Image (cartoon, rainbow, N blue to C red; front, top):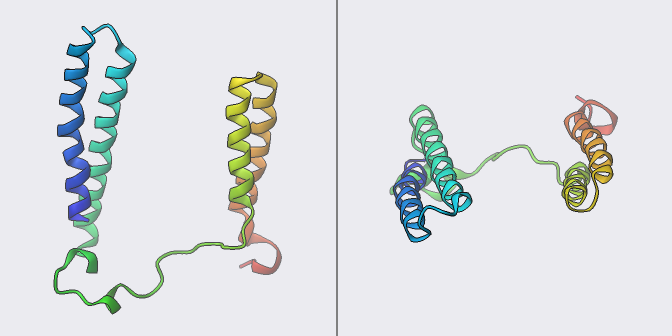
Length: 133
């Protein structure tokens, strides 16, 4: 994860000067853009720091070594549920929430209720039914 941490860490040294140049070009009158670019730089720094600390703790992956073989990266990459419908329901709830912000607040409350149901369903998906453990 060394290269990823360097890429995201370099984002700090890119976005902070860009925010200063942007502020200078707008005569420091447009604070939303300045603050947004500074926050992107801070986010890049946090991600780079996290990846740097994780890379030191985990060690070198096959992708980080130049002498690695393809078969070293084989195996389980994580646990995914290809048959799960809960991410779709959660995505629809988030879309409904943004629609509620734009159109009417009452839609936001319905979408928030649907999001809670979707989160609970996704978390407890493997606690009931055919795939219970």
